[in-house]
Image 1 (cartoon, rainbow, N blue to C red):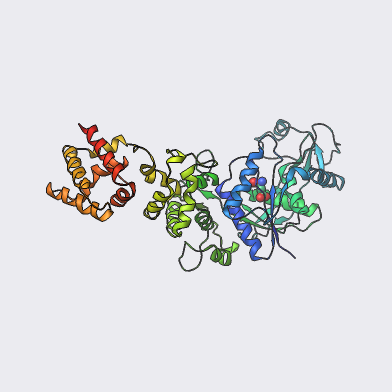
Image 2 (image 1 turned 90 degrees about the horizontal axis):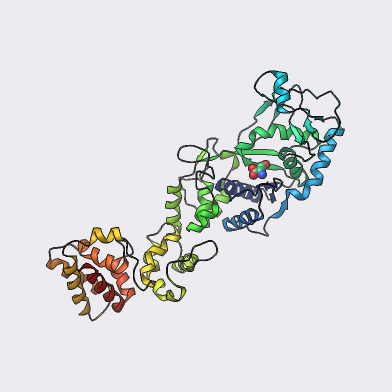
Length: 469
Ligand code: GLU
């Protein structure tokens, strides 16, 4: 039997990191089993779906390594609507489902309590189809439904506690529970790996499989991803969109490595490992039962390590979207014609060891491309103390006299200027850095000055000096 798994997102918003993790888990499982990964877009909630969300899912999956053309699909749930209705009709004809026109208030009036579920009023009343008549599944009165779950063992549900649930609405449209099962059935899905939040649906869905005469799949319900307060990651409160991380400059390799560590770890106390190790070692049945903390700080640290591990040329390429502004990435503060690829290449290795996400490249190198630096006023005030003007005068004079404009000569020259005033290099550097780059932190100063060149460096130092008068 060929293993067939599916990832079945609903295109109702940005692509959630938790979804990306389930997709990767399905992907790896299929690969390990020599199986097939199917992508199905569950687009039946017409009011909440938008085509751009579907496109977002496809491109985010592509980015994370589940590339278009390497899986089966995408299928669209809406295209299978005929099958969903046919299954509902079969369940009605075989007596496994019945029509009901009760409202919630009707049930409440009968049971005289808070609505606790449907009371089975129409089970044997023979109501036929008609406008406003919902179709309910007749759940067994006795016995248990045992779900085989690769992560949780065999969660067991008492059938008598499962209400006769709706499978098609009063307008005849099948609900998610049924559509999802029918799609899995028609697509020959053997393993359903999905988020834990669906576990309450699973006994109902398994009953539907059985009633439709098909052997149910094996399930795996993966624990949810939570924030630092252990709340389920929510798109209103937390940064959850995979696209947002991508646009900030997380590397796909770091992201997918990190996502796979949510609730699982490779052997030997390692965290940062090649993808091939994860593909070999990952075991669904080793996934933790407790919810997994999505730690953005840790992800950042991971990303920094991935950035540092890149060959410089790849790092230079990886920075391009932030240097030019493409797609959903905002353009940098300089004009395209101001950008100088050689100057960038010269400082790239210095930046590579200092940034954790690629978008941070921009404030680190903007001084090289802008006609005048963007001055951080708070940094200016903090740094330009009494004596800074005179210090800049001396530094300008000493730099003007330099024969060779290289980092080493610049450093020893400024060191000497500082020493005359009894200042350490750090203190001497600060006003020069602010004058030239506009900031107090950044790339190593003397290498930066070397790349910026004599004319521009001196012009900026003189301009800062004038500002101080
Ligand atoms: N469309 C459902 C969701 O996004 C899929 C549920 C499932 O994987 O069965 O939650």
